[in-house]
Each structure stands twice: as C-alpha cells, then as structure tokens.
Length: 172
Image (cartoon, rainbow, N blue to C red; front, top):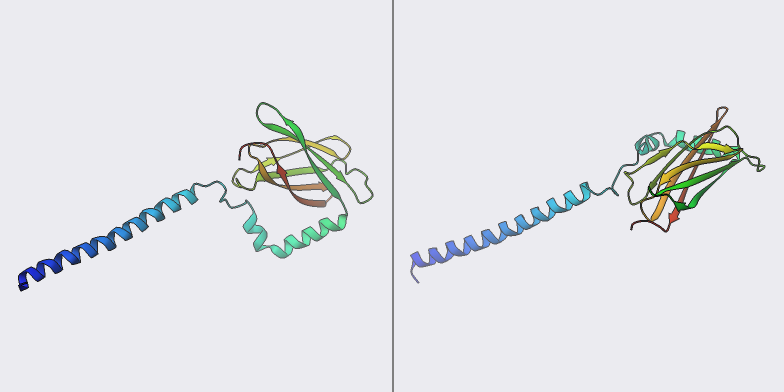
C-alpha cells in the first residue's frame, strides 16, 4: 500500500470511530431526555406542601407533636364502604379524650392524598354530626395507600394525628 491509500484508510477509520462515538453520545442524550420528561411529568414525584417548613422548623414541629400527645386525645378515621357516582366516599372521624369522652365543637381539618399521587392533595373541613363524630366526603380514585393528616383545635388546644390506610378499590 502506498502512503496515499494508507491515509485514505486511516481517514475512513477515523470517521467510523468518530461517528460511532457521536452515535453513542446521541443515544445517551435521547435516553436522558426521555427519562427526565417521564420523571418531570409523573404525579407520584411531588413535594408535599409544607414539608420544607416542617423540616426547617423541626424542633417546633416536635414540640407541637409532644403537646398533642400530652392531650391524650384519640382519633379514629373510618372510610365508608360505598361510593357515589362521582367516586366520593364518606369519611367518619371519631375524636375522644383520654377518658373516652367525645371531643365536641372542634375545628377539624383533614388532608389526604394517595401516596402514589402525592400532588393530588384533598383538603377537607369535616362537620360535626354528633358529639365527637365528624364527617366529610373525599374522592378515592386509586387503590393503594392513602396518607391522612388530621388537626383538631378546641380552646387553644391543638391535636395532630397522622394515619395511613390501604384502600383496596379503584384504579391501580
């Protein structure tokens, strides 16, 4: 082989390897773009509202939890077995003090979300239907674990309660 032919073979070889490497980089870039767009549009990857404030003020949050536990109040969250045509289900809350007496005239807030769809938060204001019994309706579109956060306030006393429940009905 003469020098000119060797240069031609070397140039073709360099082009092949350069294109192969650029091809790998292009494929990797496409994979990254697809992965980022999938994660960015996934509703299960969401920041829970107020979570950053809780972490920044963790000592105050712990103090509030201890005060809430010191009240000795108890909560029970019961989900109705049937749903209406809009997929709403009745939620019944039972609030009692340490002796089992009902907690009456409380200002109650209930926040809930499916753990796989954390951006779909429902905030409810249950109404008292009888002493210590509060009721609200919520939509349960998905089967799986729901996170419930309850706060109840009576005469400057604040009770906080968290619970997770598994619902075996709805979409996957």
